[in-house]
Image (cartoon, rainbow, N blue to C red; front, top):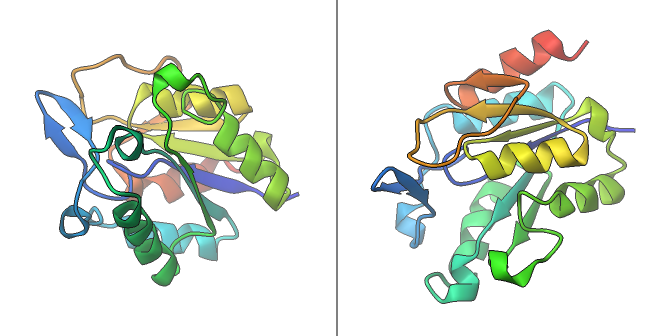
Length: 176
């Protein structure tokens, strides 16, 4: 079986838009900017043998605040740069009660089936409680990037880091 690092997108790979202490996804391709060190971190994880899989909630498509074409263009940039092995997206809102919207683990479980991933040997990295709970529900270890958002905080992540740039060193020290 293979090992993976699952990454949330907004706030982990690219800059989120923070309003009133809460993070939001960028709505235009021009606003989709990778965070410093993110590309290098993703390349280093892949070079070290980890699958890098994005697992992202994008409910703004369902609510009409974002176009599917723009989200697809953002993801194509990540693919074209050779930064990811796969991207899983949930376009639902909470009221849909789907199995894929984080904090539910559906996207991670789907990726595990498709890529023969050992979830217990894998990590979920995110900047919100939903990411951490999804990783825990899937049986992954979890890393929280703490930006101090004015919202619910995750319970018991396996580690806390300052950015995606810190993730590889943290994981490699604990990968055993």
